[in-house]
Length: 365
Image 1 (spheres, rainbow, N blue to C red):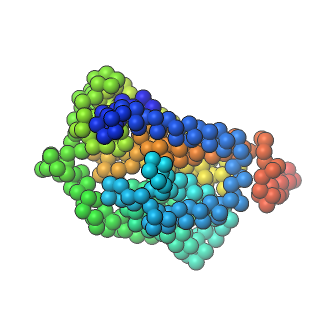
Image 2: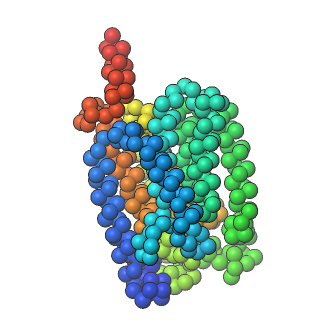
């Protein structure tokens, strides 16, 4: 919340006459997200399995509604709602896809390695969701969903040849999409040759690097950033990491990176220790989501990769994005809590319960 306020009060005051405009909205959605986190953390995650198909149907319906009656802003149509009350379905689609794909892959077993029962249905499912999101357009979210789903497919037991085919076609498709629209080509140009157009395409990239450089080791002081005075476009969303680096220096940015790494390691540990494939796949998907999104944001700001325009999980302004991430963290905590024989399991999926009981008897014999 401090990072959002510090990076947003200048633009909030200029656009809306209220320096607290963004931070108030972030606090409201953050509070709702925490409530959802607590509720899901206290609920056995296996209860989500029979809901996987309805959740996916609602998600597809919401994504279609965005294209028909969605609210347009910044050259994109990504929101549903009226006035100040808007929802971005693409943010919640990440978790919906994870839950649905986890249930689908867990039910496939070894047949996931076949072409007709594994690879082709997987491509159709993910392709449909990706097309709906790209039509908004939203390449950053599409890249994240592809990274999540391909990782889950690999963990579920996909063969090397299947992964190779997905990698070749996926990279080729992303290359085409990245150069089709003019603004995406500009981002590639800014990545490779920002210095040739410092006041145009390369402006955001260079100003982000300047801001981090100004911060040095100790930073200029909390609230003392200069870059947020319209040097970094969208400083409170895409560029919040640069503002933190300028104000608090390496003493803040390095711990932030370490926290993301710890979250990644802990998330994959939860996946590895999950006692059923459904929980393992969901934990893998959620951890991949947060890790990849953090890498895309920080990598773009530090010019390690081209800018993609995705918010930094937990730190950037983005009310729907924050609520969606907190909702996902609630599911991940549930897997950590209920991913073994402790409370709540006997009320879980009956088919899974019979399978586990049979396995225990075999081990005992």
